[in-house]
Image 1 (tube, rainbow, N blue to C red):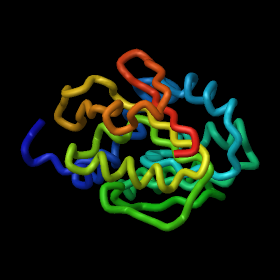
Image 2: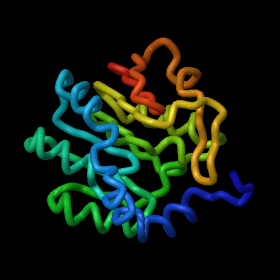
Image 3: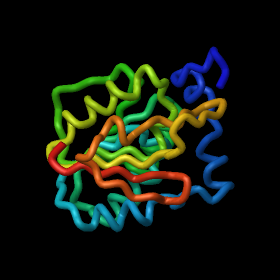
Image 4: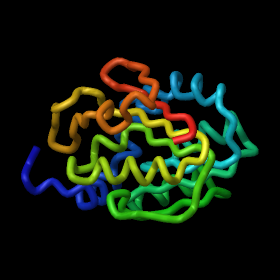
Length: 182
């Protein structure tokens, strides 16, 4: 990890090419099968996806649950614009997750491969806000190697943030955490 890593700067720049890169690598549904297995057991009418990227997860959610009201948030203006093409009737917000807050709530708050990109000083506060925004369920999927780091992500200790309240499902190097009634 470089000392000058700033998630907003990194993802604003990388957002310009991330969609094409992810699609080229076949990263459309890498971790989503276990997520949909879990989601199929939950009841929700509203979803807030933090780190919606180019809309891959949101589009799949609306394909499976077309009646759901979906809201997505991402820091990259380019990725939000790409998501608008996949999710033309959904609410999309361009904001920095580390500082974003709202009094709104959703039945389900979801994050897929996003929290690891937050600085260690920010991730705990973000998870607390996500717990407040979720009225029924909070589901996060992320790199699950505590203490690991790359040039653009951290292996946070999610078990410490969620405690015994969350169920944990390993997905290869990822971990899925689920809290009911957070």
